[in-house]
Amino acid sequence: MASLAVPDDFWLQLSSSVRKRYTKLAGLDPMKPGQKARVLILMVDAIGHDGGGGIHSAAAEKLVWADFSNEAVARQVKDFAELMKSGAVVAVEYNLVARAGLLIDLQLIPPAMYELAQSKSSLTSAALICGRFPKETRCGCTIPCQKALREVFLSEIRPGFYIGPVQAAYLDDELRARGVTHVLNLSGTRYHERDSITYCCVDFADTPDADLRGVLPACLRFIARSLGSAAGSGESSSDASDANGGCGKGGGSSLTSSVSGVGGGSSTSSMKSSSGRGRGGGGVLVHCLAGKSRSASVCAAWLIVSEGLTAAEAIAAVQSAHPRADPNRGFRDALRRFEDKQQRQ
Image 1 (spheres, rainbow, N blue to C red):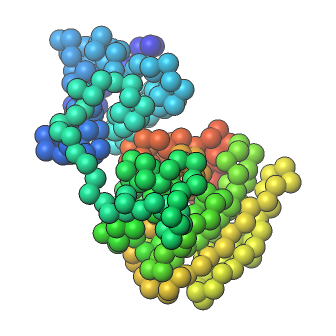
Image 2 (tube, helix red, strand yellow):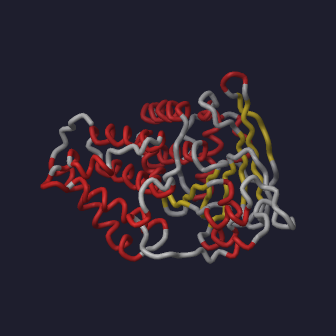
Image 3 (cartoon, rainbow, N blue to C red):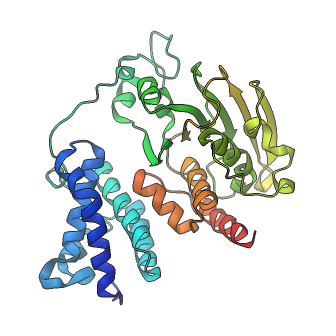
């Protein structure tokens, strides 16, 4: 690890912020948020270990800087170093929260570091045979829904703004309890659409050359309408054009159009309002297939538009809520270009 010159008050601010926000959660919550909080506090303790060795302490080397021979963790460690150079305390905190969740999800650290008490989900959605098609008497999904619905969850990035894998869209009880009225489906798959939810389906490949910016206007307009926000698509009307499909429009009918992709590919968007209820001002779930790249990229783009974050800060914010978030390299480049365009407007 190269030596980093970071002011002492940077670590004091980071430690103070973490302890103020997460100590109570770490001591009481046996679920995932509490688990991440406990690991996060261990990380902060590691930075202050070894007689004030700070980020260069032996304890920090073992927990904060270790990549555990995992590509996703290594990428977050690299992002951590870059964020520290910027002196952005909040962004560094987001990165460590995301890292804590990733270490837990990938079982790279012993359970004793994060477990408080065993807990089981009480969601009745887990009793379904198939969440994708609830009327079926057997499940043909790659990951059986009875298993998936016990393990997936909605990650809240901002109040009412959620991300998850495709199975998160099957958590009927949790969607209802959290007030989710809109779902942005980026998975390229179809499933039974619930009557109380407005859906927008935008299909594009999770490949580095896919045209992320081409589909952002439709996606961001749908998110804005879902949350009742004044923020728009983040693109000019000429960029958005008619290729944005029906996701930014009303009407309650299914609308479909194509958006040209890079390398001759194409993306498709459509919107369907199943009942017309909850149109605007509710919660929104953004999901792709694994909740990793496409959904994370669109959620990061929304934070760039709505909060003025940089691409790196936006990705870190998404990862802090949803550790599996990891946009592919092409999407990361597209988000940086998108950020540049927002700053010029």
